[in-house]
Length: 160
Image (cartoon, rainbow, N blue to C red; front, side, top):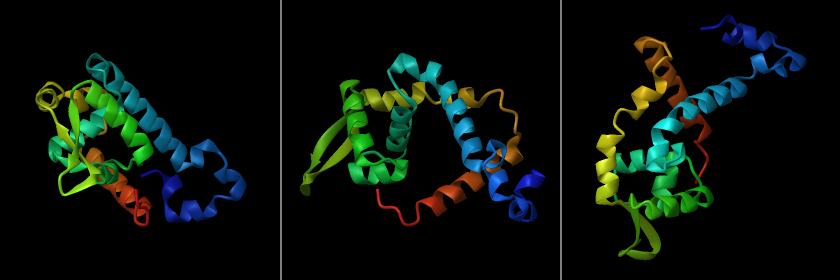
């Protein structure tokens, strides 16, 4: 771990120093996220998918036939972002939106056969997207654990 992120080093950073991009963890996360997502684009374009569309399908491959609210919670997306995305996925014939028979006000999102088949076609995408990023398995696992911890902390009080 970099010296700059130890507790001692963090407490020594002045307000003025905290304005430097190199001292802003949000900037580092933003750049890494943007650049990794950019690597997904050529892999997803042939299927008409954005990264957000892809992770929506990935969530449905894990658990199909979920309501919009639950899907939004799993993806950390609000309904204003998710609704147009689901319409696009429906137009691509990857999902269907159905009324919940138990409560007509709720929409259930269901994978179509085409959407289910896509899982096999896109199975290698995560690996292909991060090829060339040589963290090693120990660092990759540690990074994943830290990011999940941050996600959990940031979403404690949020209701999507």
